[in-house]
Amino acid sequence: MVKRLVQLFFTVIGVALGYAFAPALFVDVFHMDFPPFKWAWFGAVLGGSVFILGTVWLVNYVTALIKWLEDRLQRTPLADILGGTIGMVIGLLVAYLFAPELRVIPVVGIPVQFFVSILLAYLGLRIGFTKREDLVNLFSGKIGSKDKDRAKDRDKKGGFRPGEAKLLDTSVIIDGRIADLVETGFLDGVLVIPSFVLAELQHIADSSDVLKRNRGRRGLDVLNRIQKESKVKVQVLEIDFDDLQEVDSKLVRLAKQNQGKVVTNDFNLNKVCELQGVQVLNINDLANALKPVVLPGEELTVQVIKDGKEYNQGVAYLDDGTMIVIEGGREYIGGKLDVSVTSVLQTSAGRMIFAKPKLLEKAL
Image 1: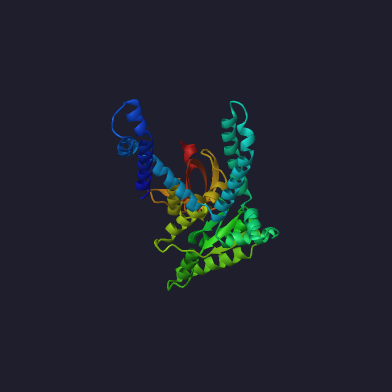
Image 2: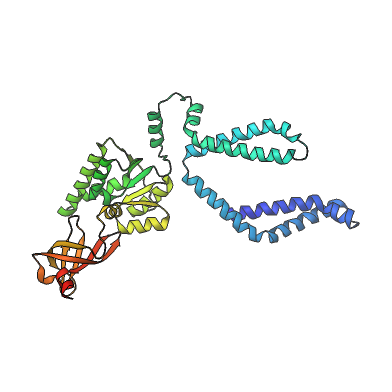
């Protein structure tokens, strides 16, 4: 539909130009005998045809630009659009007031007028966008309201500043570490729990499976704990997408609409968000980043717990839960062993350390 409208636009331009300039071109320049009005209609048809053929390559670019602009406007909250529009209109009005004085400047009057108009329109757009809440309150008669009330009204409408909304998924709520992170004060903005995530959590808590039921109830306890924490604001957002079935897909769309960040520890959701251009705060990545750095060549004293997947391997764990795979460590199961680190494997799923017994290194 948009592409047809763009084609129609260029066609109308060609018809108008052909109708206006064809009589002067054919009668005055080429001295042809037909009446001017006939040349006008001929020129209209010719101009429309030429513009249709000549702008085929340009139609796709204009259509793509319009769709990009439409997508950006759909993502932008209504308050931001209104604030920017009001500011730009005010800027253009100010430029119109200065236009007569600028136009009389010798030689450069018209270029200066054009530049000043563009500059004032841009400044008005930026100021209107920054002060959008004050403008909305001014026109609604609430200029004296408190900042807390304005923020509350904005949140009820579902409008967030870019990066302000932190959307929690089910896995990170059940995991529970998000509550400890909130208590430390490292997370700012607004923690958003969409209604479809809460519904999935309640469904898990009502499951007939004991393990699932315990996990769901743990998640609800974590939410109650977060809501009681005063260091961060928590909001349950009543929203759903009927055309989507998967909770992860709904979460990604909501994050794109609100320009928010998804808080998760789900490896697959992390990858989907990266492909969709959505920012992710992965709790596992944070935990791995805070683990003590272990470099190849360092020596550790560990307790060998069990055998590994490969032949003659032993497995041990650090205090933070990091797995250590020990080559030739199977015979030391149940006892302590001095090992030398050979390599470290780091992924979003966790960190794995490979080592070999120090005694074997001395023997070699």
